[in-house]
Length: 419
Figure 1: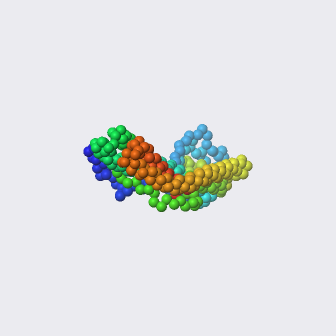
Figure 2: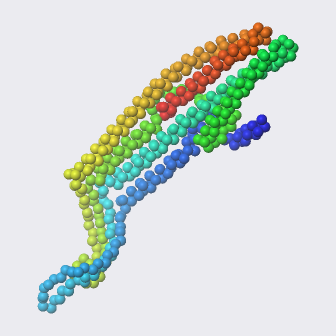
Figure 3: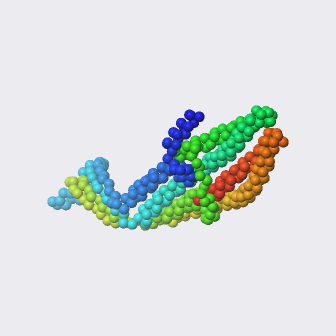
């Protein structure tokens, strides 16, 4: 017992939760703790780097080049003029150049590439958010497992208190020769059964708490109170499931890719310049090293897509993929609506059961109280009394199950709606 108290003290000391543990708080912690969440910032950083790199397309593009050649024959002018000697250029030639290009208009290609990079980043983030959302579903199961265990434990403890009281009464009756020892032993056996139930409940709760610890990275004390979800009213609005966001992000990425395909085949206008130093220079007959400069405008108008069907094929692929995504979205919505309809019916069923549970518990309690009085007066045996007690306990356990199932169903509907 001292070890248990010591362990409890350590857990409470390390606990960072407040007066109680809420499901929403645990889910928030689990999302922050999960390695996938840490990738979101990395995706944003990578997207920013890609956009910055693409923005450099409108900066001057420059390159430095050099060349040394020898050729077996050079241009010569075989004309003899009095007093004029035209020597052929040397067969070894050299040049060092600096080429500079400046995009004036790229047909919107850079803008389309930046939009594509941003769209791809949004797709990756949406995909990660879909994975992270599943953590909430997993944690919800563990949370209600703890909540169910706590309610079961409270019910068993009430029974134990009743059994202990009854044992004291019967012990005194046996000592006075009023009651038989078998009645006392039957009650004692029931106490052992309840203690076994209590131990089993504790183990199940410990397993759920360990799962919560692994998902959140936070230790939760076994004595910490788990709060039932506050205001669990369901608002049937448009679904905000991350899976739908993921599909929408993919659709936007396809739209961006369509613009990129078209931009690749639009006219491009470039301002260029080349400065060089070599032998020969622009005068190909010169034999000396000299500097030179060339500049101008360059216009490129792609034409091959008009007859090779490349752009048409690419755009058709985009269209087909867009239709596939739309069908996936419709399929997901259909499956979600089926699940919602099922959960709604489950909600109605559980509400009706809880109402009848209260009536049944009231009746079973009255029957047990009569048996209690009869046992004290020696009219019935302890076995008869325990039978009535078990029936009351079963009714209470059923209500506990139905109450937790009701809360969990309400939460499941919220999860289905992405709330």
